[in-house]
Length: 199
Image 1 (tube, rainbow, N blue to C red):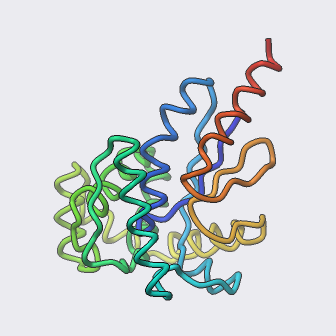
Image 2 (image 1 turned 90 degrees about the vertical axis):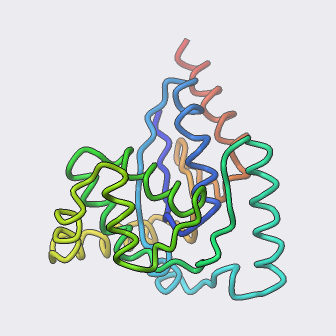
Protein backbone atom coordinates (compact mmCIF):
# COMPACT_ATOMS: atom_id res chain seq x y z
CA UNK A 1 0.00 0.00 0.00
CA UNK A 2 1.26 3.45 -0.95
CA UNK A 3 0.38 6.86 0.44
CA UNK A 4 1.06 9.42 -2.27
CA UNK A 5 1.86 12.77 -0.66
CA UNK A 6 1.66 15.99 -2.69
CA UNK A 7 3.25 18.94 -0.92
CA UNK A 8 5.01 22.31 -1.09
CA UNK A 9 7.36 23.60 1.63
CA UNK A 10 5.57 26.94 1.76
CA UNK A 11 2.40 25.27 3.03
CA UNK A 12 2.19 24.99 6.83
CA UNK A 13 -0.48 22.30 6.44
CA UNK A 14 1.97 20.31 4.32
CA UNK A 15 4.53 20.68 7.09
CA UNK A 16 2.11 19.38 9.71
CA UNK A 17 1.12 16.44 7.51
CA UNK A 18 4.80 15.67 6.94
CA UNK A 19 5.43 15.52 10.70
CA UNK A 20 2.84 12.74 11.04
CA UNK A 21 2.87 10.71 7.83
CA UNK A 22 6.16 8.79 8.16
CA UNK A 23 5.20 7.25 11.51
CA UNK A 24 1.64 6.61 10.34
CA UNK A 25 2.87 4.78 7.24
CA UNK A 26 5.41 2.81 9.27
CA UNK A 27 2.68 1.52 11.59
CA UNK A 28 0.86 -0.04 8.64
CA UNK A 29 3.90 -1.07 6.58
CA UNK A 30 2.92 1.41 3.87
CA UNK A 31 5.26 3.27 1.54
CA UNK A 32 5.19 7.06 1.66
CA UNK A 33 5.50 8.27 -1.92
CA UNK A 34 6.71 11.89 -1.87
CA UNK A 35 5.46 14.14 -4.69
CA UNK A 36 6.89 17.67 -4.43
CA UNK A 37 5.05 20.18 -6.63
CA UNK A 38 4.86 23.96 -7.00
CA UNK A 39 1.71 25.16 -5.27
CA UNK A 40 1.68 28.53 -7.03
CA UNK A 41 1.87 26.80 -10.39
CA UNK A 42 -0.88 24.40 -9.35
CA UNK A 43 -3.15 27.29 -8.35
CA UNK A 44 -2.67 28.86 -11.79
CA UNK A 45 -3.34 25.57 -13.54
CA UNK A 46 -6.54 24.68 -11.70
CA UNK A 47 -7.79 28.25 -11.20
CA UNK A 48 -7.96 28.37 -7.41
CA UNK A 49 -6.73 30.86 -4.80
CA UNK A 50 -4.59 30.78 -1.70
CA UNK A 51 -6.27 31.10 1.73
CA UNK A 52 -3.89 34.02 2.26
CA UNK A 53 -5.83 36.03 -0.33
CA UNK A 54 -8.71 36.43 2.15
CA UNK A 55 -7.58 38.12 5.35
CA UNK A 56 -10.18 36.60 7.68
CA UNK A 57 -9.55 33.13 6.26
CA UNK A 58 -5.78 33.62 6.56
CA UNK A 59 -6.13 34.59 10.22
CA UNK A 60 -8.29 31.55 10.99
CA UNK A 61 -6.00 29.26 8.98
CA UNK A 62 -2.89 30.14 10.94
CA UNK A 63 -4.74 29.82 14.23
CA UNK A 64 -5.87 26.37 13.12
CA UNK A 65 -2.31 25.41 12.18
CA UNK A 66 -1.18 26.31 15.69
CA UNK A 67 -3.96 24.25 17.24
CA UNK A 68 -2.90 21.19 15.26
CA UNK A 69 0.79 21.74 15.96
CA UNK A 70 -0.07 21.77 19.68
CA UNK A 71 -2.17 18.63 19.23
CA UNK A 72 0.66 16.82 17.45
CA UNK A 73 3.29 18.13 19.86
CA UNK A 74 5.56 19.45 17.09
CA UNK A 75 7.62 22.62 16.77
CA UNK A 76 5.80 25.29 14.80
CA UNK A 77 6.03 29.03 14.25
CA UNK A 78 4.01 31.18 11.90
CA UNK A 79 6.61 32.34 9.41
CA UNK A 80 6.63 36.17 9.29
CA UNK A 81 8.00 36.02 5.74
CA UNK A 82 4.97 34.11 4.41
CA UNK A 83 4.13 33.96 1.46
CA UNK A 84 7.35 32.12 0.54
CA UNK A 85 8.41 31.92 -3.09
CA UNK A 86 9.13 28.20 -3.10
CA UNK A 87 10.18 27.84 -6.74
CA UNK A 88 13.89 27.25 -5.94
CA UNK A 89 13.00 25.06 -2.94
CA UNK A 90 10.74 22.78 -4.95
CA UNK A 91 13.23 22.53 -7.79
CA UNK A 92 15.72 21.54 -5.13
CA UNK A 93 13.36 18.78 -3.98
CA UNK A 94 13.52 17.21 -7.44
CA UNK A 95 17.31 17.44 -7.33
CA UNK A 96 17.24 15.72 -3.93
CA UNK A 97 14.93 13.00 -5.24
CA UNK A 98 17.39 12.33 -8.07
CA UNK A 99 20.26 12.21 -5.58
CA UNK A 100 18.48 9.87 -3.18
CA UNK A 101 18.37 12.36 -0.31
CA UNK A 102 14.81 13.68 -0.49
CA UNK A 103 13.85 12.75 3.06
CA UNK A 104 16.73 14.75 4.50
CA UNK A 105 16.00 17.65 2.18
CA UNK A 106 12.32 17.59 3.22
CA UNK A 107 13.33 17.82 6.86
CA UNK A 108 15.74 20.66 6.20
CA UNK A 109 13.27 22.79 4.25
CA UNK A 110 10.12 22.09 6.21
CA UNK A 111 11.81 22.77 9.54
CA UNK A 112 13.59 25.88 8.28
CA UNK A 113 10.27 27.31 7.12
CA UNK A 114 7.87 26.25 9.88
CA UNK A 115 9.90 25.29 12.95
CA UNK A 116 12.55 28.03 12.68
CA UNK A 117 10.73 30.68 10.61
CA UNK A 118 13.67 31.32 8.29
CA UNK A 119 13.31 33.77 5.42
CA UNK A 120 13.52 31.39 2.48
CA UNK A 121 12.63 34.14 0.04
CA UNK A 122 16.32 35.10 -0.09
CA UNK A 123 18.90 33.03 -1.98
CA UNK A 124 21.58 33.66 0.65
CA UNK A 125 19.33 32.28 3.37
CA UNK A 126 18.50 29.22 1.28
CA UNK A 127 22.23 28.60 0.78
CA UNK A 128 22.81 28.90 4.53
CA UNK A 129 19.98 26.49 5.32
CA UNK A 130 21.31 23.98 2.80
CA UNK A 131 24.80 24.10 4.29
CA UNK A 132 23.42 23.72 7.80
CA UNK A 133 21.47 20.68 6.56
CA UNK A 134 24.65 19.05 5.27
CA UNK A 135 24.03 19.67 1.58
CA UNK A 136 26.40 20.96 -1.08
CA UNK A 137 24.65 24.29 -1.51
CA UNK A 138 26.61 25.21 -4.63
CA UNK A 139 25.66 21.92 -6.30
CA UNK A 140 21.99 22.49 -5.50
CA UNK A 141 22.11 26.11 -6.73
CA UNK A 142 23.63 24.93 -10.01
CA UNK A 143 21.24 22.01 -10.48
CA UNK A 144 18.06 24.03 -10.02
CA UNK A 145 19.02 26.27 -12.93
CA UNK A 146 19.19 23.37 -15.39
CA UNK A 147 16.44 22.93 -17.96
CA UNK A 148 16.06 19.32 -16.81
CA UNK A 149 15.08 20.29 -13.26
CA UNK A 150 12.96 23.24 -14.36
CA UNK A 151 10.96 21.09 -16.75
CA UNK A 152 10.66 18.27 -14.23
CA UNK A 153 8.92 20.57 -11.75
CA UNK A 154 6.57 21.92 -14.41
CA UNK A 155 5.72 18.38 -15.45
CA UNK A 156 5.26 17.14 -11.87
CA UNK A 157 2.88 20.00 -11.12
CA UNK A 158 0.91 19.47 -14.32
CA UNK A 159 0.70 15.73 -13.67
CA UNK A 160 -0.68 16.46 -10.20
CA UNK A 161 -3.33 18.76 -11.65
CA UNK A 162 -4.21 16.18 -14.30
CA UNK A 163 -4.76 13.59 -11.56
CA UNK A 164 -7.21 15.81 -9.69
CA UNK A 165 -4.89 17.53 -7.21
CA UNK A 166 -6.05 21.08 -6.48
CA UNK A 167 -4.06 22.05 -3.39
CA UNK A 168 -1.66 20.73 -0.76
CA UNK A 169 -1.30 18.70 1.25
CA UNK A 170 -3.12 16.02 -0.66
CA UNK A 171 -2.65 12.36 0.16
CA UNK A 172 -3.93 9.61 -2.11
CA UNK A 173 -4.61 6.15 -0.66
CA UNK A 174 -6.13 3.31 -2.70
CA UNK A 175 -7.19 5.81 -5.34
CA UNK A 176 -9.00 8.07 -2.87
CA UNK A 177 -7.89 11.68 -2.47
CA UNK A 178 -7.65 13.29 1.00
CA UNK A 179 -7.10 17.05 1.22
CA UNK A 180 -5.63 18.66 4.32
CA UNK A 181 -3.49 17.57 7.23
CA UNK A 182 -6.69 17.19 9.27
CA UNK A 183 -7.65 14.11 7.23
CA UNK A 184 -5.07 11.79 8.78
CA UNK A 185 -7.75 9.75 10.55
CA UNK A 186 -9.24 8.82 7.17
CA UNK A 187 -5.82 7.83 5.87
CA UNK A 188 -5.22 5.66 8.91
CA UNK A 189 -8.60 4.00 8.43
CA UNK A 190 -7.78 3.20 4.79
CA UNK A 191 -4.39 1.78 5.78
CA UNK A 192 -5.93 -0.31 8.57
CA UNK A 193 -8.52 -1.73 6.17
CA UNK A 194 -5.82 -2.57 3.62
CA UNK A 195 -3.70 -4.23 6.30
CA UNK A 196 -6.64 -6.29 7.55
CA UNK A 197 -7.38 -7.44 4.00
CA UNK A 198 -3.83 -8.81 3.71
CA UNK A 199 -4.25 -11.14 6.69
